[in-house]
Image (cartoon, rainbow, N blue to C red; front, side, top):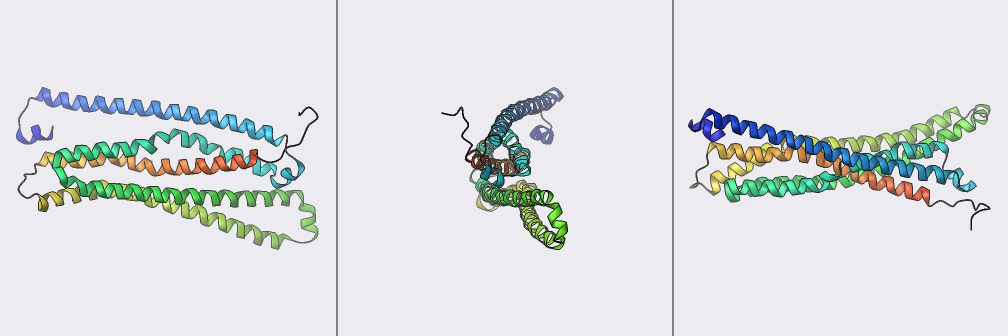
Length: 283
């Protein structure tokens, strides 16, 4: 389309046909993505409902010592937050393998357009992809620390509500406030670090296509000076790299959801492995 507009070749019908084809492909892409996200959300909801029932059944059969270590508020926090991550991770799971596949396809298309000059831009995007993976692991570790800090704070507040009378009699309000502030400070610091990590990755996505295109075109200018570079080639390379913007923008979220899913599964598994009461009907 750019070539026909630049050179003045082709009829108006051909140009309108190209535009209509692009619009149809965008519509198909949107509809397909909606179906994939709906299917993932449905699978995640089923897993959430099943594990919620398992947690409720386990809570009814816990030993007295296990009940003391897991208050009702902590269990509610487990169901409301940890299990909610399953639905989100299932919805974004397809992007964990779809983004590397899209990167390979776009690298092939860029190589067809400008040859080996596409390698610097692809290398920049691959480096950004690896950095996203490393930061994704860091976000998962921070999420695990936030979960532990939240559980400790919720359990403390549960104990405070149960022993409010003793707290007032002994005038422990000041000590309680200092302890709560310390727990909240740890939790706030971990949440802040996780948000900083995620926003840094998302900010890097916006300038990635432009930087990758600049690196590739600059390499073509000095490494392949004898090969002509048309305007449509530059637009094509920019468009190919821009296709990766949406994928690379969602990829950190997908990795973050996958790491949080792993942490949530570990917490649920640890709860389901707690000792149970032996009832009369048990073999």
